Image: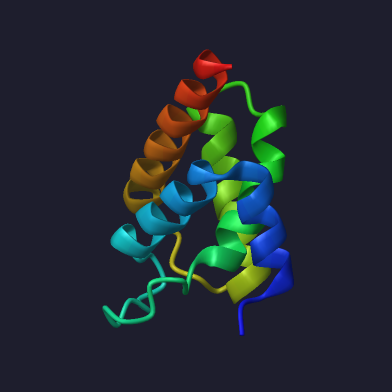
Length: 102
C-alpha cells in the first residue's frame, strides 16, 4: 500500500516529485538502489521539495539535501560533496524550470 504522505506530496508537486525521487534513485547516495525498489527515495523527495521554496541557489539546495539525508539516515552518512553536489545541481535545474513554467 502506498504511503499516504508520499501520495499527498505527489499530488501537490506532480511530475517534480517523481523527477526528484527518480534522480535520487539514479544517484543512489545511500546505496539502496536494488533496481526494483524505484520508490525507495520517495520519503526524501517528499521532505526536500517543500524546502526548495526557501532556496536561492544550488548551494542552498545542497545544504537542504545534506540536511535531509542526515535526518533520514543519521549524521554518519557519507558526505561526498561531489555526489551530493550533482544531486543539488539537478534538483535546482528541475526546480528552476518548474518556476519558469509558472
